Length: 581
Image (cartoon, rainbow, N blue to C red):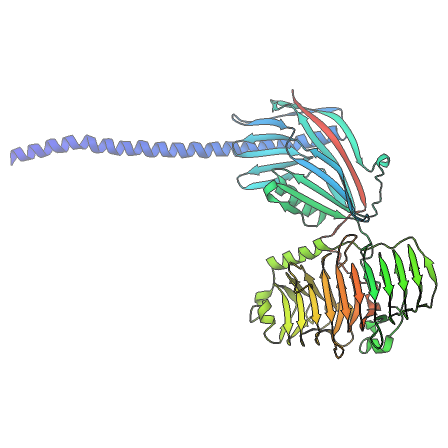
């Protein structure tokens, strides 16, 4: 027993240092881990603090650079602060800005590049963090993305764009101090010697920035212009589009064709003439019967042809030629631009004018409405989720809200749009079709706006009522301002009945084609109460448009839209040289 206890004691004595050694080692490892993590956190904190300091430096540089580049000072210096491992540099090739203007009044449209230059940048770098001065603004980039620290030299207000662009070149590496000097300034727009004058009369201006900070540039464009920027992510590019207002944004004629190469044609024979006239829905029930009149005016940037025994109960105003043939009749005056051929009857005067403006396309507006509705809609708020199929499976009712559909087809079904509690927006990706006795009925005092993207067609049309009794009905007074159907510049509508048809559309079809678009509306043996704006319009046998005079003064495009309007343009390039010293 004694020997055993001795051996046990020796074994305990020998094992004790080993246990202490293991425990001590674990303490060392743990301490090393804590120290390592603490060092990493400290490094990150230092880098973060230095980035914050660099933001202040760059903001100061931004202020001083504007003074120099825009002519308020001959030169300035800015102190640069940084920690070990960080650096300041000038990258003269960083980013690019391109500004183009497209003359949409030309046929074909022509595009001129006003400016296409490298932006350059003064860049601070610390590991994966960057703060950069570019285009007169300061941008920060990190693993969390890109944000704007201070805005660039880009000012949009009251349809005026002022862009005194500052571009940067200089020393590749900057040490403790940056010297700023002015190089030269080039006036880009207006420029009388290049026939670039204000106000702008027609066209589309695109401002495109290619930059690793493009997302933040895009957010600024959207914030500053209340419009939607277009992104090209693979190429790190963003574009802001500004449109010069052209032509009417109201529906002032029974039929308006906006394409210079387009045509309005009325043709009909025997008991089925095509014709236009007018009424005033503001009087209430029985409006057409009580107020039928001769304000069914036809206006186009292109041609007007009246054949057979068709009749225009109103005037004609054409930006090209006018033909009144056969037994065709115009109860008002005729105004033409290039030529006339009058074989039928014109009750009023015939005179030559200097031209007629078309209306700019609304493709961006339509696309924005469809995109917004696709991302955020009220389809699921009904008892049964609203889809293209559920609307075509029995009578349905929609109330105030925004709805998105792949297509809107009604076959012997009625879709009631109850605007009693508010307006209704329906965005359709493909097309709308009312077959057989398919009906859309609008009740209440609110408005319905239907936007058709037209990704695909049904046959050849984005909207159709084919040889049936389909109807778009607004309460009981044909108030056209309560139903608006919008399409892009390639929109096509086909409303065609049979001899016994009772096809009726109450509302507005608004799909201006601009100069080069091809939007087209065909109406045969059917009645449209309201007005049409498209690139080409044909009223065939029995096709009739009754213009609703209550549309006068009604804006076709609400003010709060993605169409960024531009009338005055002021652009210059101001070169800034940044050197170390």
